[in-house]
Image (cartoon, rainbow, N blue to C red):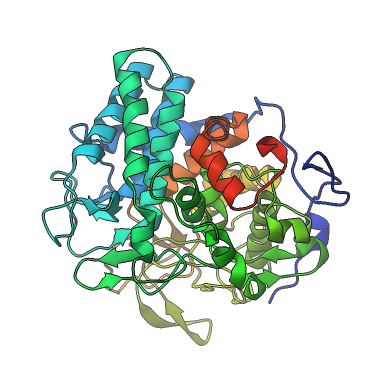
Length: 477
């Protein structure tokens, strides 16, 4: 494992917790709104927003998983799209009426889409939805799973909409009503129906619940918070204990680099896009004396430090061009690279070796760095600038950043499923991914003025879920 530069980390001195202070507890304080970003970053945001506005199916609100390749819809991308429309309205990139109408179309579709246990002819079951849906019919795409985590992202977007659209007019009242109904319908205990204590990652009607559960440390934090905050089908009180029980296997580093590790950066970002973890603590983080936001900050620095050290010698890695997460790749090939045989991958989670879900094949994803903007703007903004300066239109176009690129994959004579190869510059993805676009845009909005966070802090579901998980302090006080 790479030794990280401890001087890179910034830690706080004390935080307000349960009516008093906890000296020495590292946290990033809640800051005043209206932080600024360079002009080039606003261009990134506006291009990224346009992707959602231009690719959505306006008949049902479904957003493609990827584009321009013909695609099914990702329900997680829809969850990110709902706050994206509000961001566009606030920034003057669309009208509030357009954002409202798109949101209402989306919520109506998901409320009325057919539900049931049948393997075909439905969009979901027990208030949850399949990971991918047909863009036109809205029904299950092929044999994908009923997804607890992707439905969670969708419902978080729905809950945001229920907070943001607060005017006393018929359309906005309907949004609020549908938001409550969609969340209340989800039966979280369906994913525990075989007697397991934790929530399964998914279910196939042909074969039952997926064996893997949302425990340990990864993006599943948000799943458990929503399950605990549910107004009707809530999970039991001990759910968060199940989630944190395996934490001992995830700790890495010492002192200022100590952190709960998960190699791909999306695991440190997705829950934080909707939930403000600054200055609030559950039992494990109270003992660790820093919050989950600081944990994600440390993970961001660790990801950058690994890329800068570049132990596998890939082309293009540096302390300015970095970022490993889940993304497309050139494909599953074993090929010679600098005198060694190296394994390359297609779509896969990527991250520093030595951490859970490790994988490094030289593929960099811009969303990895940019999705960490609120955690570490001092290294993310230079990374965004360097990505454009060094790679330009190869990876940055009308709708912002393409999903990923690999400067080491210069094998131009191979048949690829996706992307293109330049013998000098390497492989570049063909598509923009909805979940990438959402992470980039929403995290920029959170950095600027707490945009998503400030609405979600008002959500009774989020507050209840966090309190049932044992969180105290800060804005929960």
